[in-house]
Amino acid sequence: MITIKNARKIYLSNKGEVKAVDDVNLEVKEGEIYGVIGYSGAGKSTLIRMLNGLEIPTSGSIVVAGREVSRIKGAELRKARQEISMIFQHFNLLWSRTVAENIAFPLEIAGFAKAERDNRVKELIELVGLEAEEMLIPPS
Image (cartoon, rainbow, N blue to C red; front, side, top):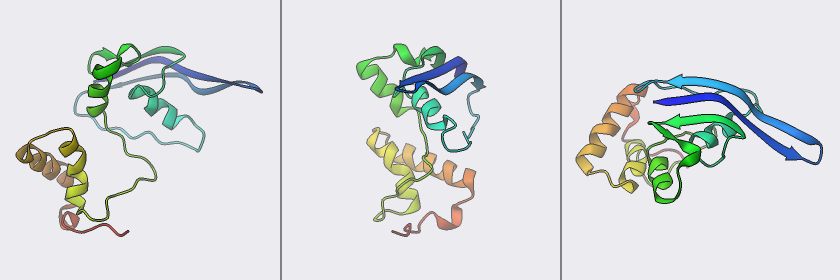
């Protein structure tokens, strides 16, 4: 579960304050999937970076899986980041792997057993309707 309360991120520049994220409130329950969309410069990347601890909110709180992200440090933060996924607007696939293998790769790095990876990949491929493409190699 993700709970964002009154999250703000303000950057200081030579021209003054830049409000990248201003008073965001959101709750995402377990099993829900959301996308963050908006114009260039709207604060999407900053919000996502606050979710995974790459940025710390100027104010407000962000709780992921019961943990206040800004208070997690070191090995615990690295482990938490393994449980938080994000897909970038311009992403790169491994051209030598199939669609299914690209999906499985982060799970492999995280140490998931092959059977568990295969089950999760199957679920995700079905979720987005890529059954016919799962064995294809993405164009390079």
